[in-house]
Structure formats: C-alpha cells, structure tokens
Length: 266
Image (cartoon, rainbow, N blue to C red; front, side, top):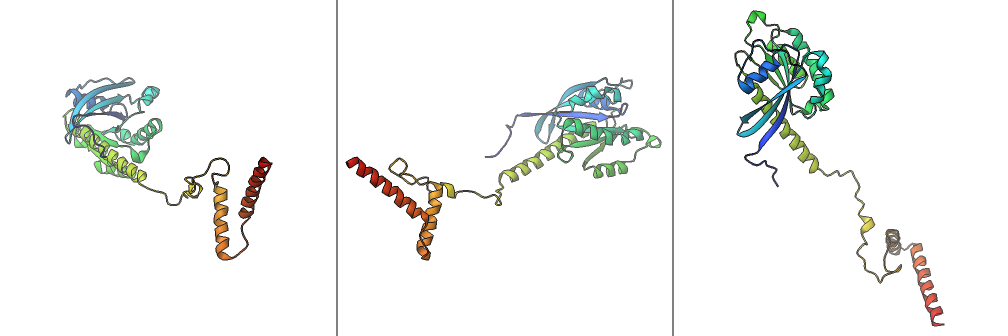
C-alpha cells in the first residue's frame, strides 16, 4: 500500500528562527508574512509567531514561524518552544562577525532543548542584511559555507529583509530541506521494516507436534521433551545402538494403565 497524502491536504510546519539579537530575525519574518519592513523594529521579548500559507512544488504548506529573542536573559522563555519544531533557521548578519560565531552556540542550544539528532534534522543558515555595502561586510560567504560543511548543514542562503531579497526563497529552501529529510527518514524506515535478522534463531521445533491428535487426557498429547526423546529413539533404531529411555517410560505408563484396568475388573 502506498503512503500518500490527500491531494488537498495542507501540511503544517513549525519553523524556529534563532540568532543573536539585532541580526534581523523579526524583520525576516515580517517581510515574508506581511511584506512589511520596519527600520525601527524593537527587539523581541520572549517569543512571537506568525502563520503563512505557501505552495512549494505543487504542495500546500502552512508555516508557523516562531521568532525568538536573541538576548541571553530570555533563554528560559524561548527554549521550551524548541520542541516540536520541523525546521530551524540559524540567522546571522553579514556585517556582524560575532553573530556568525554565535551560530555554534545557537545550534547546540537547539539540539539540547529540542531533543533531536543533528544529522536527522533540517537546519538552514541565513545570512541577513545582504543589502549592506561591501565595505561593511565582515563575514564572507565562503567561510560560512565551510562552517556548514563542517557541521553537516547543506542549506545556506543570504537575504535582505530591507530590500526584500531572497526572503521567500529562504523559506522555500527550508520547506524543501524538510521534505528531503522526510524522504530520507521514510526510506530508512522502510529498509528497517523489510529487513529480517538471520542471526536470530527461530525456535520452531517446540511446536512441531502441536497438531497431533489424541484421545484426551495425559495420554493423548506429546510434550516437546517427549518429542525430542522420540526423535532420539528413532535415531537409535537406525544406528543400532541401545534404545532410548523413552521406550521404558512408555512401557511403564502402559503397564500402569493395564494395572489400573485389571484392578477395575476385579
């Protein structure tokens, strides 16, 4: 049976945006959701979220985007919202080298509180403020690309919330990365379910004689131990060695039944 979603089903994805304060996380979210940019946007206190419907590769998605405060004093407020996330966007500003150095700490914090595996979760690195003049740039694209390779992250994009450059592309990239990771996980799950471990012993001999009919009572069925002894007895007959003790057990049982029958006649 093929596991397929209904054609009109909308997929809900929780997207968390992390990064130092002032890198433009709120501006990125507002530009994408409402196509607005506020030059004097205040720092986020705690967490905020907004929803946005988007079509990617013929499928409908509802992105629940969570904007988190970048200041350390709000750590206790933001970390509970990491759980249940589908995508994490790690943001830095191209004119702020310290914000790039902070990506390592943000990634570690998310992995710790979201309780996910680094190689099984879609991370997107976003370099914001692309509109800044070249003389103000402190972080080169090549070194961020190298950092992503060292940390197993395959999705990197530079954006400008102010100029509305690559903003939608960043969230489309996030959806496609999530979809890719879902496919990988599905393939691994199918491989695990279709695999038979040949190193594990299957004990079928115990039930070989479960269907042998009998007259009821203790003499109408054969236990697994007796079955094994009976096999040994048959091998003894073929080899010419002395008979198995099972024969004497059966003879004694037969003698006992005969004795009971004789006493009954008397």
